[in-house]
Length: 551
Image (cartoon, rainbow, N blue to C red; front, side, top):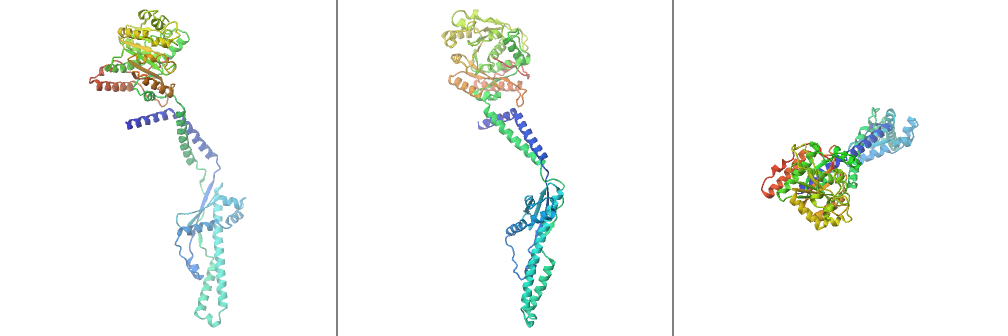
């Protein structure tokens, strides 16, 4: 169970990413372009690096008569070397030697000193807008530092030589030829030699060369980082939009909210849209004509799914409901009833929306008498029922008996809820059950009015129609709570208005529908121990898009 929920969450997350992919792509393009453009417009900087190597100069210390200290802490010695390079007036001397408008502050700001691992080598790097200037700054700085260290050592040895000469001057002629005098003379000679050599404890291991490529900006690196930032920003925008957007986006969302099987998916249909617009404008259109093969197949598949429920119970009366207006329940009711009628069943379509009836106008029928007249005993069910011819369908070429329709009525009652809840409505349903194989009831939106609530317990099954991309999750969740609380015999959901061509959507053609039919068939077989596979073959297969139903 946990694995199934995890897979569903992952699938929903992938669906969100596919659906919101343009936002991720937009953020990716903006940040990547900005990083690339910013890098290209930055002034190029060049960095030249020289290396200094330090030594302990133990020979000089021995000659000077000082104890030789062996360093037991290489890290401390390395830190000392770094401080030696940074201290002093090397930056001022470098600026004075080079000129070019350089100052001590500019040299210090563009100079960096770093250690090379744990060795006694120190790297000195200078950065400038000119590669030649960067190399000059680095080399002059290191040369000045080495010269400074040489001068310091020369002064040190000269001072030590003066001290030894002073000691020799204080000796008598006999002491000079003694062992102590001879040792002082040897030391004086060595110190004189070291002072003249100007030996240093640091040397230039490698001079800086003129760099051939800029050290900054790093266009490639900045562009990659910009792309990564754009992707992360796009993910943040996507999940923020998804959190703020409460609309139902995928057919699986309806299935998850209502906890019911998905009976079918009705994609967009230009033919039904034109029919609806024509009727709204008062134009003439053949709304009762059979749909093309690919569109009619969607409703035959839905009917095939519903027939699997007949294994456990007989479905004579079906209630088609929706949460909000314009979800498409009226068109779904009519097309579902037509599909059953074309198969040879005796079908009655009842319009139970007594507030805003549209069926008479859409099907070119007389507006009365209708349901309201039958409920107040002003007309009989037989006299109020109108029959429309459906002709031969594109799926089944034989002639059909037609579809009986009971419209709402010409005069709208002031108390539609009371009429629907009356005993007269129960009697009408009983008569319809005994006369027809199937009774399909179209209702007003349950989230808007409560007229149809009394019918929830009086029918054999309830079908929920939801419009993908329009229905809100909170409204659908409230409707689900209401339906389950009322104990309605819920059968499944129909996703209407799906756009299979949009980015991120998945295919919902014949393969998906047939898989759903097999799943329902398996459930029915496990319950009764008999196979209902033949029922699935009632509808022909098609992988073409089905129509959109609009109320």
